[in-house]
Length: 212
Image (cartoon, rainbow, N blue to C red):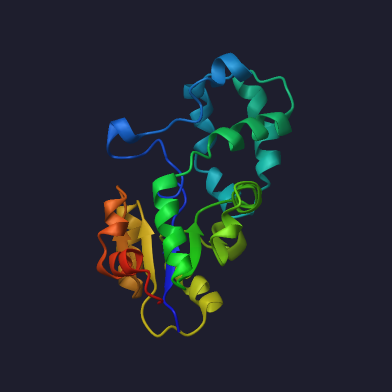
């Protein structure tokens, strides 16, 4: 049986605003004020305590924005705003994707493990065509559990089935890595491409093209 390898999305496969290296950060909302009339700083209020309900699929992403956007002065279509957001919050880590392509060619079983709600998950899978590289996408709204909760890892394993060796998991959150290791996965903190390519299991297979 080939090994299961899992990747987080934001901060790993998609460049994020939270990278520890300031020069590596990417912001989808840089032109939000001039393009959509919304102050990016004020929009950050959307990511309050209730946002977890959206990520968990307990509240509609669209309905949450319907209720919030008028409070920051937006008068347009919520769907137009979502389209703008999704298109710009999608700066793929192309260098990492090349490594992932080599792993896939070698027979690795590849998955996404991410805290997402349904709409963005669908966008990532279908519009960004991550479905062409990965076997499945395990995300919070689908599982009814969020990283770093233990239940997230348990429900992913329900889908993966019996494993000959621990899943290999790359994520940019120290809390998630700690939780993954505690659960029994081999979890690796990702800040740079070398955190993946420098892993012995990955390096061996991407250098020599061996099957997993």
